[in-house]
Image 1 (cartoon, rainbow, N blue to C red):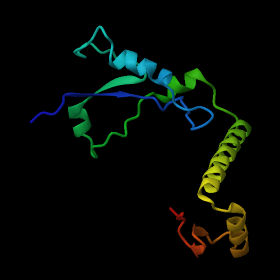
Image 2: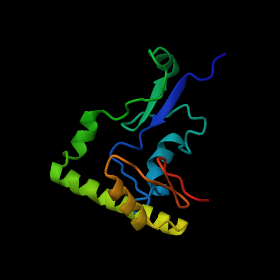
Image 3: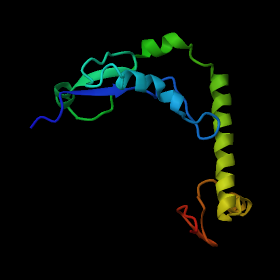
Length: 149
């Protein structure tokens, strides 16, 4: 039985960075994919054209791999590097710190919605030292983080 001859892949991840609040994915981020994969002039999808992001993989080639998986490198490092020079360590550090601050704000908002007092949790973590984690299940401490429902 033959399932498919080709697998088409679209690389949305390379050179794209989406976050929940500052840069959420929107329909316009998928416009290029929609244009390439579902062109109105190619309803039977027999005349698709490959690009840096949109590539055809032969099923036989995928199945011939030592491990069959879809962990497929899409854009070449040269294509990605040609668009933008690598960021400095200072810029990367600032970016990561900003992402961590945003994540912490989201966690704090989530904890507030659940009625979890993070100040109390933080005090218990500091009292136990950095090698112990503290979870919250109502008022009980545990080694896993769980939240009341």
